Length: 577
Image (cartoon, rainbow, N blue to C red):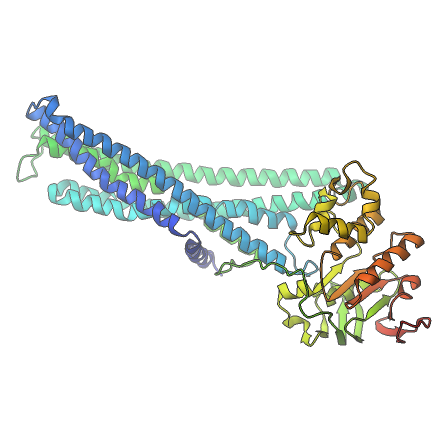
């Protein structure tokens, strides 16, 4: 696709986003147009007051009503300008909010284990910086474009019957400004596109290097990467200055042509008044001459305003291009992030695997090949195997977090047929390295059910044996934690994450090494509580511990690329695999 095709497609995308603005955008467009109508009235009134006062020597008292009208018109135009600005800003904020919501919903809908994921820095730059670049287009450029399209024509239609020379002068000079705007716009569009790309590169590089700072320090690459970031920053600086250079140059050219047009009207009126130029059939009155002089700059003003905001259009198109390059095409309809149900309406879920093949994300190694497994609803099963054999990959595939080949049935439905919100409500998973966010323990537990009451959070903490070590702290469950669980041991972080499970009512529970960081005594207590909670639910635990597997009803072992049933010691309450 050529740059011209891309530019047209980005323009169509911007036009489609106008539907998200609501009535605010209509107000932002209508207010300046109404202000333009009041402007003509104001200019005619002022010209009439001055013409009467100078030519007819009318007393000031006779002009007081007209002067009061002028003041009212000035106030009304100022109010309309303020209303238009506020409405334009509100429309832009509404559009940005909807776009950010759509992009964020798309990120959340993708599997975190997907092979193709945007860089963290580039994605954040697209959602924050590039979406922010849309503000000027909808708040300023779009209303200015409507004004520049309609107001000069309306002003010309009013002036042409009054003075055909001035009307023709406007008709010949006004179109020059859009022509030069288009010429300048081609260069500005290319420069802005390069500037947007440089910004994404810098953000992506900085965020990725920041995440891997420890690794860079260990391998002595910190200085080299610092130099790379400095080079990327310098590239962004040069691109930004290039955009500004084109913007200032184009504004100067457009101001020059607007000034020529105003000077032409002033010259025509002046030469006519001194009888040097006689192109009219009737004499030019002072009132009409003043009206033409007052209207001359206003005819060009909408075009000058459009020129001032013309770079907003280029910035918005470049932003759309960069957003789509990083996160894909913007959705044409507004996505809604559905609330994940926190209770299972149909009880436990059975699981069936048939001909399941799993590969590593780079497809370099097969983890499972043609594996089959059946787990009855309400059954508790262990998946055994050493670290790195593929236990986590299997659980993630069942949770639809990794691509797979073959068939996975949850209940009576193929995994791919489950709606996202329903699947997340019926299936819950605890990974081997759960994420702890900066915030209180209570808030971290309540992530599983944001509307949970304090007593529900407390009960979940007690069941996961979090309350024991939390109550020893001055603030209890309100104790603040650092990002990534800073201040907690591995076992404590695991139990906080496990407490989230107790706030859910899922039919299938997937746990990856839930007791890996616990001693034997605490492991038994935690497993007792977990099995009690999982009665009537399907529970699958990936573990390398035979002691944990012995507590389950059945066990399967990953060996090589196969999934094999593994006998467990006989127990009265256990079926034999």
